[in-house]
Image (tube, rainbow, N blue to C red; front, side, top):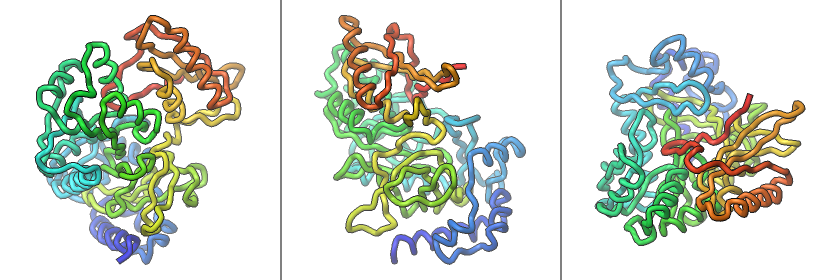
Length: 416
């Protein structure tokens, strides 16, 4: 059976399960004129998109959980919450079966990255309502990993626990992996001599960028794997073992499409567009043709099923985060790659404003060494101009002034 046939069978099973009892999708499926689809192309042609705005409006009109629930609320045992990257955070419920589907997908991520039962994984962050590493932690436990929570502590205390319990794996955001490198340097801790051999980073773009990946791998003396997912869809991708610039999709769990953000029309592989996902499980809180807002570029994999495309360069940015400065499209991931290519920079912030009705940006950076900050500023200014052909102002911020991020970083600030 081809991948497309497998996806179609899972899709039709899901639709049959939710068609009568899920109020949110019942009307959408009626408009799509049917409860069964002949092909994936038929599904894409007939089924309308689901958007974050729709979900937000549904939650607002039907608090607190909305109507995208296939079963009575009493059947749901897990509550997580979206990160609020675009708008108010939304609660997301799972039945035991739906939550196990999420964990099974994360176990696939662990396996594809090479994790084995008996190894140890550390999680240096505080667990909140955001789904991400809850799923990684519980999936790792089911897989036979010894999982060490490192929440509720300072960064230095976390480094001491890493030294004490000697984990093989570390799971965190790219930002926090870099932050721990800076803390270790400041405190005289040699990260390259510790036990961590592999990191899985997620929660924000960056792990597939060569500049970010090389800085993290060099600082930790370990191999890095990127991963991405969302609370509302679950874990979606993992780094290709041979080409770390590629994110592979868990295609047997998701039907993935790439569309033009403006027209909604399907794009050819190689074109940058918006990732659209259909969850082929998680019947209790499904998503059909969900516009994620993530900008990606699909790439065919030689010798593999044509349906099994990967994401070239990982998550390139958010459709609503791109800004146009004097005709140049600037994505957060592109700016992050430039910043991370310059030595001596800790945190940074991008300020987006307007001058004479034109969009302008500037950067504030934190220098790790105060001995010669001007050279760091000049180096970044030069690199930005080389890459973007723009003069982007750079200023040095006092140490500790810029926000520090443990979970998803929000470095772009819109000025009034």
